[in-house]
Image (cartoon, helix red, strand yellow):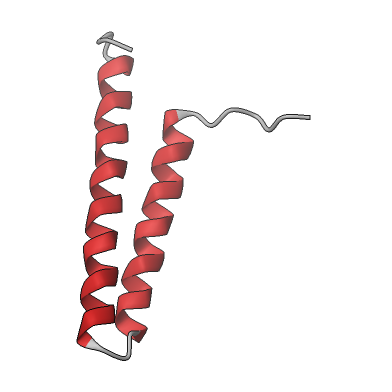
Amino acid sequence: MSAKPLSDLDVYRRLTEAAEALDRMAEEAASLVGETASKTAAASVRGMANAVYQHALAVDAGGPH
């Protein structure tokens, strides 16, 4: 049985949760390298979440799918 497809909102929520987890990881990092890597990854994932969110808003407004 295949899983239910994720809506754009579901993808946005999961990416946001992942970014928050990466931010928490940065706080726990033992080195500046680990902290910086985690913060950079969080920013990247947050950017992806924002892109999905913006796309969802455009579709809701009647824009391209």
